[in-house]
Length: 197
Length: 105
Image (cartoon, rainbow over all chains, first blue to last red; front, side):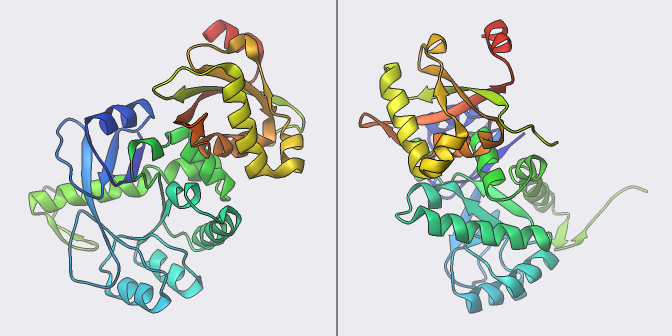
């Protein structure tokens, strides 16, 4: 089961395409209402705030803002290139590094973007920071299949297993957390109410 | 697992679009995208070859050097347009022998 955790435009056609491309769920950053297909509502922010969402992602290259958001534990992921001290703190707080294929697809300087992505992924691998690979599609034609995103992960320096994990492991944790939140069993990071023996 | 160099793999791919394409149009676009992404040296090492006998209904087979499979997949994903039409190229499966493609498709 793979999930595309960054889709900006969602409609009936997107749903059909996502299913065809091998995804069983998506995180939509925009308007979406659908039943029968696992959907998470995401939100991207530019600076540290007290906002909440099912999947909250910081989009800012400023290291000070990144570190403040990580220290505050206020985001679930960072969609940017992250350097050493920040990436270690992300690993400690289980904040994911979000890599969007769209950044590469629409960049004017492919080699520079690829170099920065590789650098971030190498550091994330070293410090065991969760990695999320997504299409980052702004329209239906920017969607890419799970197989291609796995290949993308492999080019960035992950092995096949790690690349597959980047398409489902962290995403499942987020969905599990949202389920617990809706049931009122989630208190905070690392604190949940368990019933039974 | 280590892969022996120069061993071939066959990528079965599909072009998702509103239009049906001729093989030469698809071939041109994919080879251009591969050349842009891999460079001339990389493209020659990857040994990308179209197998025309498998082309039909916007589906085709590419033969590539085994160690270049992820890179060629990424080059396929980086193809945005074919003859001015928006496309999504998805690789369906990677095969080790032509016989297996014939038996499964």
